[in-house]
Length: 270
Ligand SMILES: Cc1cc2nc3c(=O)[nH]c(=O)nc-3n(C[C@H](O)[C@H](O)[C@H](O)COP(=O)(O)OP(=O)(O)OC[C@H]3O[C@@H](n4cnc5c(N)ncnc54)[C@H](O)[C@@H]3O)c2cc1C
Image (cartoon, rainbow, N blue to C red; front, side, top):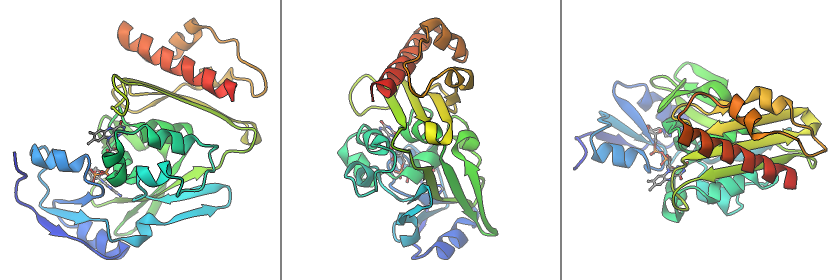
């Protein structure tokens, strides 16, 4: 199928992009890796496509205090290739490298992935585990939102009409931090059937365990994380992980529990 007709604009800066996005039926175009197929299948019928590729502000990468701030147009490939400073002890790079295949990673962006909010996507879970904060701009100004809570359901976010995700701020991990990320999928590079993500950082007294690819927003397993020691191996049983998981059928539960178990094993092996 071919897309329904639409207008197209390629603004050169952020104010121009925000102005264009404020119009009726306007939609941002980042890497086009999800939006392209949706247009072709006519699942999306925007009146105006606002191409963000010329907006340099959205590609900025900075270290601000204890956080790494990535512009929304940062591609998966630039993280995989080490063009982004390694402030998460390799976690960002590892997650990026397992997204789809190289052609998708070259064009696909972190901001596009978060805004699209596919439950099976990698960044929605990994950045929840890392406690990222998102910067959102709209005509009237900017606001911030925690990644945990930004995704409100499958393909649904707190963004709202006319808003743009501009940057993602990711707390840096200390030298003593541990992380694990385990993705179960049928073939390498595919969307996940289940994801387990674990981040522990004693420097911030931070513990988080996340179950991803659950059909909606990733689930933060708070009671499980509270049981995790920083300096010794935990003695969690499978029953304890199962008890923390949300309701799902037995096959899904098995996959998700195994993903979390393996992420925990990775974290404590580091
Ligand atoms: C074959 C294939 C396999 C894939 N496998 C995986 C995988 O294993 N794991 C994974 O995580 N992903 C996977 N993806 C998705 C890929 O990561 C895409 O990069 C991502 O879903 C969308 O990013 P994009 O930059 O291409 O966004 P686009 O497709 O351009 O946009 C996606 C949506 O986000 C909106 N949007 C984009 N940028 C912004 C912004 N800054 N502010 C507000 N709204 C915005 C658009 O309007 C659109 O609604 C796969 C994609 C393909 C085609």
